[in-house]
Image (cartoon, rainbow, N blue to C red; front, side, top):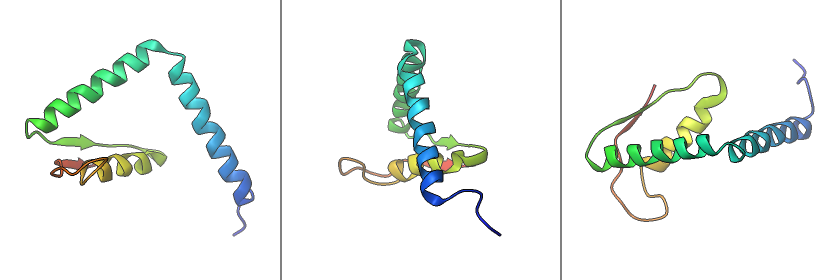
Length: 87
């Protein structure tokens, strides 16, 4: 089966879409504030020994798995792994 587009076109398109989403987030102060609050709550829960459950659909599994990898070991410093589960 032939790919629908050349790899460089596909990568370029994916990068443009990613930048577009990030620009849209930066233009929405409420979304930035909400994201910060979610991050603080997640941090508080993990520090108190709670578990985090992450789920996604479509291509979101890559983002979800990256978050889990960051939580599962050291990220910017030595620390104990957090309990997180991918669904």
